[in-house]
Image (cartoon, rainbow, N blue to C red):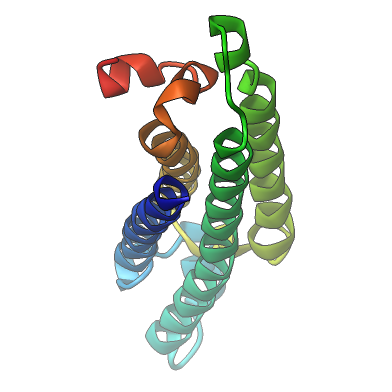
Length: 178
């Protein structure tokens, strides 16, 4: 049980740090006027307070991105905890049994990734946050956030799964040196 609590706290720390990194990316790529897309600038070119409106669009885009980042990280965290908890209950006697949770690990990862994609669509793509941002900035935020979500799940499970179940996490034996 102590191992599981250590895993939950470690997974929380990893996801918190990665969530803050993703938030920092969103903030960095949406806080300046020159982060606005050409189509947004062209649309607002004749407005009296164009700069203020552009910054308002960028702020709205940031809010949409952050509104997606935290749930995506949260589901990654919950998936990690679920895997760690189920692996904690398994007492493998053989190498095959030690690898028995590989399917669960993969299924949770794919489910978490599917949730991140669907929530991105409804929280970010459908409201068109990408319209306000330069495409490169938008693509960078999305790609790195998806990477951080996946990396958070991987590191949480690889580093904190109990030692007898390490073979259930692909590549964890290399990461942990066992």
